[in-house]
Amino acid sequence: MDTDPDRARILEAASNRFLEAGISKVTLDEIASELRMSKKTLYKYFPSKDSLLKHVIQERIKRNGKRFNDIMVSKKPFEEKLQDILFFAGKEITTPGRQFILDLRRIAPDLWEQAEEFRRGTIVAAVTKMMRQAKEEGVLRKDLDVELFVLMFQGSVQEILNPRTLSEQPFTAVQAFSGILKILFEGALTAKARLRRSDDIPNELSIER
Image (cartoon, rainbow, N blue to C red; front, side, top):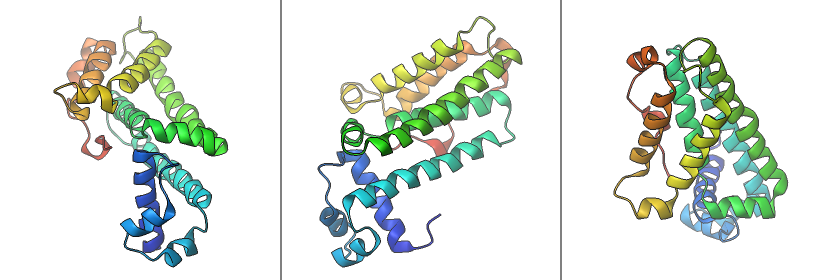
C-alpha cells in the first residue's frame, strides 16, 4: 500500500482514466485538474506520462497479485475458492477498456508484456491448474476438457461483458457475469460439488468499470 497520500491519489486517478479512456487521450494536465492538484506537485512524483504509466501498470500488477494470493490461501471449500478465482479472472479480463489495451500494446509493449505475463502466467495458469486438481478430487466432472473450459470462459467474458454488447441488453455486467459463471461453472461441477457451493458472488470482487 502506498503510504504517500498524494502519490496514491495520482496513481488511482491515472489508473481509472487510462483504463476507461485509453492512454493516448489522457494528459497529465487533465489528471492534475481532476485532482485539483498543481502540475508542479504531480510532476514532482511523475516527471512524464511514461513514468506515470509504468507505475500505474506495476502498481496494478502488485495490487492484483495480492488479491490473487488472498484467494489462494483462503480456507474456503475448494469449489468456492475456484469460483472466486474465476470471478477474479473475469474482472481482470473485463476491467481494461479496448482503447487502453490497444494503446498499451502500441505505446509501451514492454509494459504490455508485463501485464500479459501476469494474466497468462499467473491467473490463467492458476485457473487451469486448480481445475485439473478439481477433476482429480472429484469436484469437476471427469469428462471435462479443462483447456476448452478456460478458453470458453475467457471468450464468453470478453464477448459479452463489453460496453457495446451490454448497451443492447437488459442485464448489468454483474448479472451477465453471474450468468456466465453459473452456466459454465455449474455445468462443470459434479452433482455433489454443486450442492456444497455457494451461489453468492463475492462482493469484494464485484465488477467495476
